[in-house]
Image (cartoon, rainbow, N blue to C red; front, top):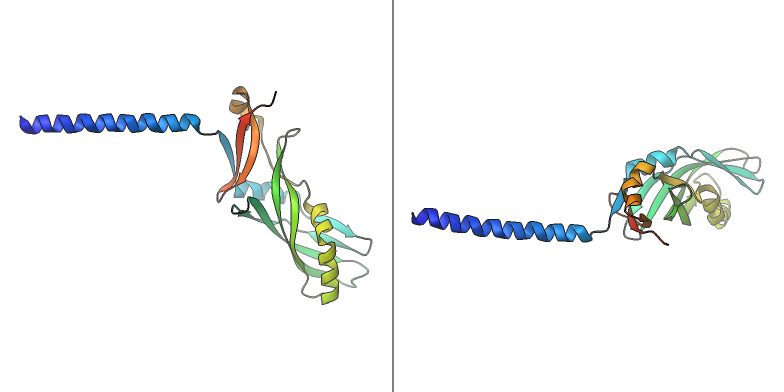
Length: 192
């Protein structure tokens, strides 16, 4: 009888504590900001459809950029991209293969529900077979090339079914955060 009473007392206390924990978790969940996460693989797929891209350089030659390999940079809330690039034209005499490295922030475009690249920073534009002076010239022109080639590139488009629940709650996309898993779009109250 004593063992049964001790068991019932212990079980009752455990249930009470467990119930309190569930209520506490439910309380925290109610305060959590709703969000939508886009994994890196989806970003990579969408971005690949926008390439290859050709960018003319002052009538001297053209740069052809291939689909970027994206990388998430959560420590700076940005996305990095490395692209293979070919430079060809009369001024170069032959084609030269190189790499183009950039990083960028993201913004939401409400008119078409897209996540887009903006605030693009050139890391490095490198062509190993070009003379150093030509590489320096290209890197000086690099920020303009980066903006021309990647400015406003769409990384993801939210579908109506992705946001239907949030729309019904009076929420709209807000801050975009780069995480180790992808991009997380927070939903905030709609502005009147």
